[in-house]
Image (cartoon, rainbow over all chains, first blue to last red; front, side, top):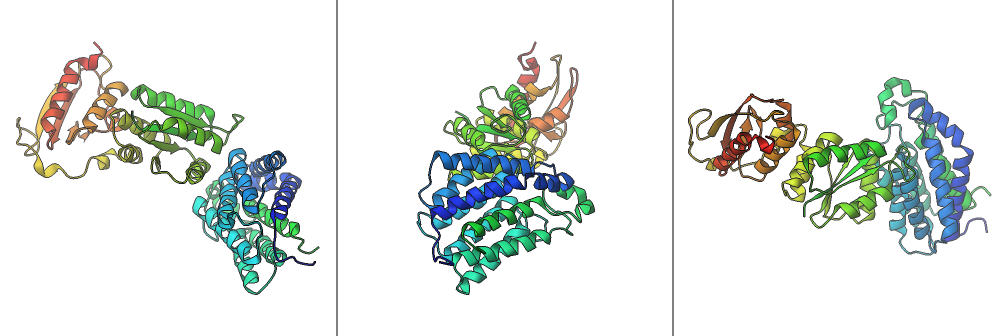
Length: 216
Length: 232
């Protein structure tokens, strides 16, 4: 089957495992991005957080996608340490709340969960599109996911659209002046550098698409 | 039972230091530090914050004070996990000044929202004076200052003058009264402002109070000053 109609907890767990792998793989790249315009801890913090997510998944098998998201939320909030912890943690927590106890997620629910996750990041970080933050990846990703779902795409295609838009969104942060976080102290010196949070968001959303079999 | 405080900082030592400082002026208030990550490194931990909240709220609620950006986000996340209870307020306040102002308010028995407000107005304490109540000012019992004000001039006799502890005593007791009181032109209900006076031994304090408790308030200041704040 090229694109199943529903995603289950197996997908959610696979997504989290793939996220941990891709974050570990890009640890140095994220550290380098953050070293230039932040405090250099993004890659290390996120790697520590997702490593803890792997341990949590080994220790207890979540029964639903929502339970997997909630486990990730609590773990990331406790273990990441920097701003990425509460931001990604809130994203997963809001997604968990949105999908509730559902055993299977369809394309529309995925769009809604991504939207709730993005809204959580906005609420927590108080950032807008153009501030050179994670939101610059998340907002186009949500718009693309919702549009794809409305056009009748299946879950994998929805996630693929989201990941592609997030990747473009991350690139779009390169010329921006940061208005949030440590990078905002740098003014124009932040121009020409990609926001590490937007970069990691794109990696994690691509992992979601890959776990759903997009492009396979 | 008073309102408790949770001090969230990226640094274990900073959180502990703020608790140490605030505890000097608020010996009976439960002050719980939540600094650093679980392993003690720089950062903030949801676990630590949630544990601290459980300890700080002994029935009258808790106010959370934070340092930089992600400490605020971690505190907000902890509250969201707990279902945003009415018994916990997150103060938008400078960590050190806000913690001390909140601790003093809690020590005086102030309610949750008042303690939070004390923190949030720590850098501008005059604005924190209770609103209203001025229309019922008692007739003056001494002449000087504005019409209707109760006034007095007293001289500090204790060796250390109006340092942190007596400032906290005065601000705490005055804060529980329905009064507008100025001491040498600053808000007598604000420990931070009283400390900015830097009034040492021999300094004169010009007191002016209005409101229903004006006379009680001035008498209290006079009594404390004349007793050397119990330090002599």
